[in-house]
Image (tube, rainbow, N blue to C red; front, side, top):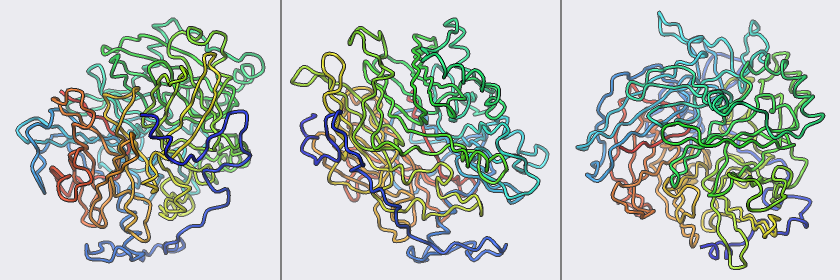
Length: 619
């Protein structure tokens, strides 16, 4: 399987002691940008027609900008009682498994007072598609009743009024106080998890919120980390000791005033080890975001939510981790290097910039640290190895967006080969404060940020590491996942049965490039990559329709066939103010007319904005 990858031209491949001084993967120059005509922020009048007709030219700057804004239009309505979805096209096949597809994401980004936040700060809105048999799909949706949502929503009237902006946003109101005070507003909008009979919505900066699985009613905060710590008897991490721990102790109270009282935060991306039937969670110390150290703790739970093991690692680098991976024997962290931004901190403290301005990307090194951390005994495989200090430096500067999978194999030389599939982008492009094109000065979304030079934007790569018998890295290479698809991609997923072990197929969201003014984002294409030979097949929506993250749903009768299943995805027909749940036959992706099995229409009054990440729970 690995040999096929070696036929692809290498983007970066050198021995670890012979690293380049500049990245060969991304250009270092400031990228050129496509500009749309954005309405002036000095007047309250809008130049965008409120309802452009479906026949409007997709090449029109007005149509492109209107479509982009509509993708992030808030939805105040909820559907507490499940309603049936009618097929707009096709029919649900009889072999589609029973279960529920959950989708998390922001639902409220613009309140009733005219304040707007970055979608990353939008209040969590959970959508659930229940496949109950007989071709029937029921839909429900509710807001996660976080402390932030309770603060911002007026119960009597149902109106929304944002009190504070969140770490990625800024209000223009002069009465607003500094965002640095308790900057982490947990909006539970990023991922959704169903495990051990319980349902959770997660966010990067705090504990998960638990919801009732059937009604989607919020139960409350679920401090899984503290519970796990208590069961293990607490204990400090594997500290680097000395000055760093002293500094962390002195500054802890200050950071807790800024970030909230929680000493740990759960990384929103979790993993499920299907082979061991375990849930894997990762947490880090809240204050590490500002310190040159990262305290990572991995937790593994069985299907009854009993903690099976806990592993702690202290890495002496300032990192910001959004996603990670695992293999049968290792945890894999690709380090996104950051630094404390003094100027940004001062601007944030003065209310002149979003709180996230306090940190910035650290592009001072041309490499990417990859930490290969043992899941089980530290010294059983490689005695004497210092796992947290011996990072493998990939010979390219990569900012990791999302992980698709990772797995290990023994190669012909008897060494361990670790393969990591991920979506990465350029340090020169990435910016949390500008994600989705959020402009803090106008509080609008500018699509030009997401449509810069395609080489800078997220795309799929394979990172291959070879470790010798002592655990030393012999080689590290970075290749495109396929030479036959060079367009931007993100949200890589696989058949979940193959998580942590070798997979042949990978699916991701990408672009057809057919919209002149929105060539790269929003995505409109599902791409399927055959990792054994680099072959690519794809399915695209119609004009002026977009998609989110794909989700692979295995057939209950697949009997280990990795390709035997369906891909579900939400299609946002923004020009028609409609959402559809699309079911694709995974085998037929690439066939012009046969890939779509069914397209289920969400009622217009419940049309929802762009979702982030989902979860499939089979019955």
